[in-house]
Length: 268
Image (cartoon, rainbow, N blue to C red; front, side, top):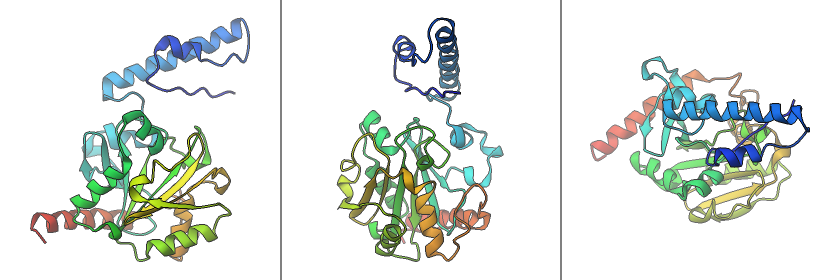
């Protein structure tokens, strides 16, 4: 079975023309019919939710009933372009996830499509909580194609932010280097996403005014940085969010977020 993926900003004619011709005649016609059905579903989703595609793993967070949301789908901070929530599978406490409202495969593609800088989001979240740039570590697994293990099973851009983790960025990066055979490049924060090569998978992480990235990372498999954190936290078996929710750490993340907000409001 062949999976067909598409970008939501194409015209319907252009998108039908882009259907791969794996077969001629009736078989190709059936592909086109199914493709049009996918477009209709997308447009219905846009009318219902205000976005161009269903959000998959994050649909409840972005569009669900607030009263019915699960613990990890609570919106802690809302912006016109993105939302912040606690992450499912928080191996350590005080772990946030940032989700763009408009679907993109990665924040690199979101940056290209929206002409906005992901680094600015990091700064806004940090400032909202009254933290210094060195107080957080942020990272992203950036897939280049749908269905890639690098996408962690979501195929939807998401950025992780750790609040005051009990290890410095240098230790985090050193552990990541030791757990991979990748070639890592370092850059400044404001050039983090501009430095990434196009059309290849990537891993990107940063803290303070520094960032580091590696490309062509499909061989690292799923949830690479989660495995790094699990190793640093002496919980090597607890890295997979699908089997280890770490609900206690989700609760602590929510509490910490609200406490930091209150400190900022009090001018503390």
